[in-house]
Image (cartoon, rainbow, N blue to C red; front, top):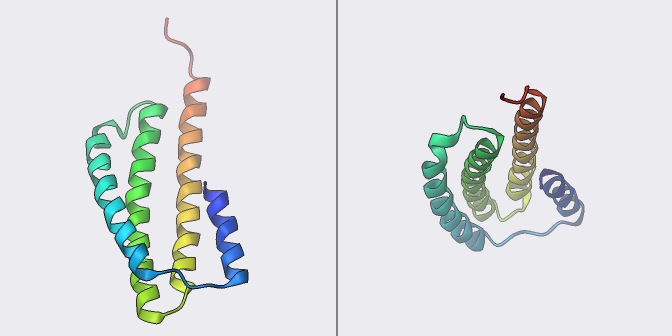
Length: 117
């Protein structure tokens, strides 16, 4: 996902275009509410095994991403330019790659651990 967002960001940087700020804001706000509710329910599992931790990490990252989309929508609305969306897309790509790295490290650590007797 992070690599796809990074590639899409580069493509949009090269080809231009301004996203619709009102649509970005409406979708970002609705998704934020849903992801905050989900993240709150999963908070207790943030330190569990890699499966539980991965769900928590992705829910948390989705909520952070929704806040970033709202900021980008405000930036696009205020400037009339597409660069705020591109900046947020680059940040979201990094966030997704960072989350994937955390999950892979946790899963590999569990695979390397000795099996319980």
